Length: 190
Image (tube, rainbow, N blue to C red; front, side):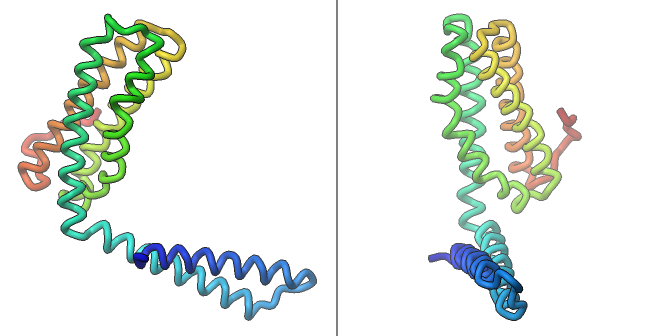
């Protein structure tokens, strides 16, 4: 069991113990007992936070995550461009199913690894990539919703935007990675 899960266990024990103490003492809560349970919960929070931070800044984790980020962005960009090129041949109501099939695994991998951008290249780099990624993801969500409602024009417009923004997120990340976190030119925020 990792230290983080041990911290979660302490939080759980502290919460349950404190709750039990409150229920047992209907007329008045025993302050000393309640504070012991509260202390266990607080220690659990501290242990879990420190363990999570240690795990997030581990060199192997960061290296693996940076690879996952770049791979995910490449796949998302490629799939968005493919779907945009195929959109005329796809029934508008089927677009949402194609999005679910093609995008969800890479979206999840990117989201799980995204904090490593900040740990590796700084918060400005994180903000630059996330700004573009979030815009692309919102555009993809609009396509999904418009597909559900059968709005052909809206799906078409937002597929183009999603493809553009995923490509922009990939290019921005690759630039940041190549320069060690420094953007060679000021990139406009989207």
